[in-house]
Length: 149
Image 1: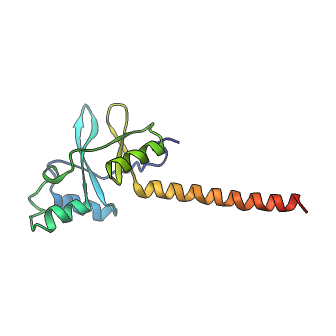
Image 2: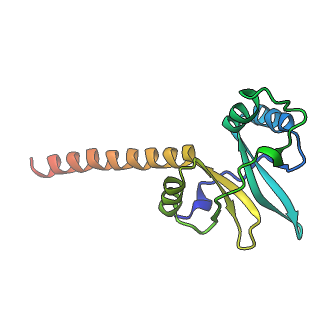
């Protein structure tokens, strides 16, 4: 299964020039823990950074900086890891684990933003799959019991 099957296609984005206050307001409005910072390139939105709620707390709130003045470009994480849409889920998990990140923007072949996959998305998928396996075990035990009577 490719990562595009489970990623969220509704990504909340801002440009570098947006204030951190604006980014935080979007996080609150859409109930998300991050915004992806984008640049427009050849008609495509290309991810260039990410800001998380934790970044805002550590970089601004804890240091008492003004979130109405500081921009997304000022605090975004610029060493952004992304994953191509055809990437497999376990490959994405390995990348998240190796990089120690919880969120991966999903891009097309040209680097255009298509979605975002989070640790939560992966955990929900795995929980569902483990539930299916548990049902299989119960079903198998019932079948065996019925055949052995």
